[in-house]
Length: 357
Image (cartoon, rainbow, N blue to C red; front, side, top):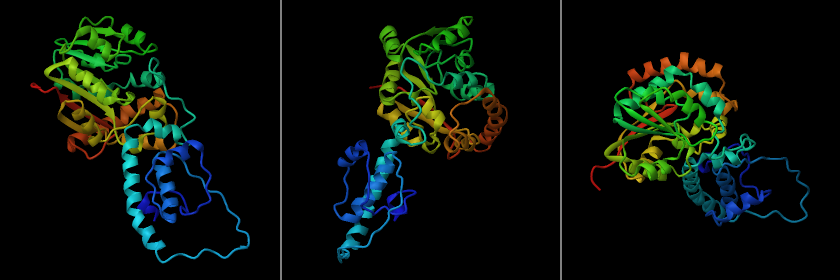
């Protein structure tokens, strides 16, 4: 039964002995629960878990009965079996919705909810960003994937400390590196100060649009940024306005919802994408999909072990160096053998603003 409904780690999901937190009870009031008894209680467990809440079990001591036990009615079992399909569909739909904002799931998850989500003006994983700044092989790989699709005037939104910026800043390309975070921008400005074809701006994409106007860039690029934005479709609509008709939008995002763990939550990630979710966001923003593919097959398992199973709360320079020196070369080699793998730690995508319309 649990395999059908999606309930996990619960030995008896039909029991009526329950204690719910008030926020969980309020959530269940809006859910389409079955009307028959056993399906009603089974659905409550599966749906609560699908929303990210934990379910604990405690022993129950049975005392001698003073009243006769209620017997199963002849209709109880058929009604219960008939409700399982509806429960499964509701659970699957809930999980699909939760993948769009996994930060909500993380806040409800007993393993992660003690960590704080970062605010908009301060980036919370500055140590991890600094560690990855020295991951030269990884950063070169990202630039090699996105660079050929970018035009002469490019806006990099969420440029961080400029690690990818300097990889993308070729002599024939003018790059505007945009970073809104108060605790990140000074380092970005310092690192690109000597580059004549790079301009650092402390702003959001909407502020750049207001200053530059529509169709001001040949390309816009987001590297490990879109997952930090709650309304990713609205952000991509801004990108679509910033680029000229026929211009490109390059995206590099974390992939595989099953990998979402401690580092994602600390970093303020709203989600990890799968291919369908990223394509949906691109098309909903009015952009055309040019290419979408998974990247970094070899990095998926180590990430899952470190940040999902072990809940390691940070990425230090030692771990970043091991990843960059050992895992990235293996992953790039595997990508040459299988250019479009069925999964990977990241997704890379190129979209285009339609020429007409």
